[in-house]
Image 1 (tube, rainbow, N blue to C red):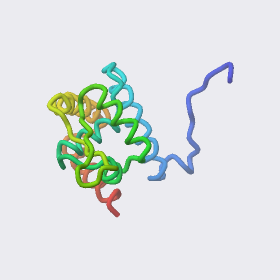
Image 2 (image 1 turned 90 degrees about the vertical axis):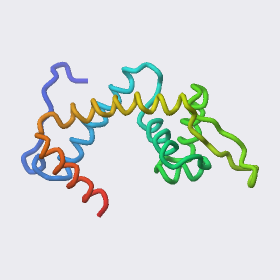
Image 3 (image 1 turned 180 degrees about the vertical axis):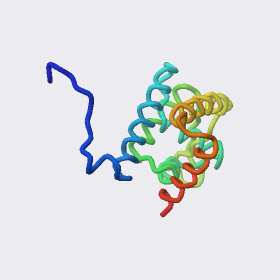
Length: 150
């Protein structure tokens, strides 16, 4: 560990490259999200939000499909659902057609929590995009969507 801390510096040949800038923006976004979720004190994180949002939008799903649909690793889905179930935000039941599968559904408490988490994410979006005008925010979102889908 250094005795005298200096501010981070970026080499000139790197600082204007889109990949570097995207990485820096993603790191800032992740830090803002982590801090906002941690500030709630209920142990919920971004992947919990993603699972609740998917269940609210698409309805009950098997754990495996839920993991594939949200892009969350199977073992992480199992752990996250365990945490959500312990808080009464989701229910898991054995699939009557395939008894080896669990079908997950969101509870009324889960829907309520999701609405509260929406407000947390809205605040983070505002913090992250504060330097941009409303028009620039829309343009940024459109550009990022194009990059993400290409």
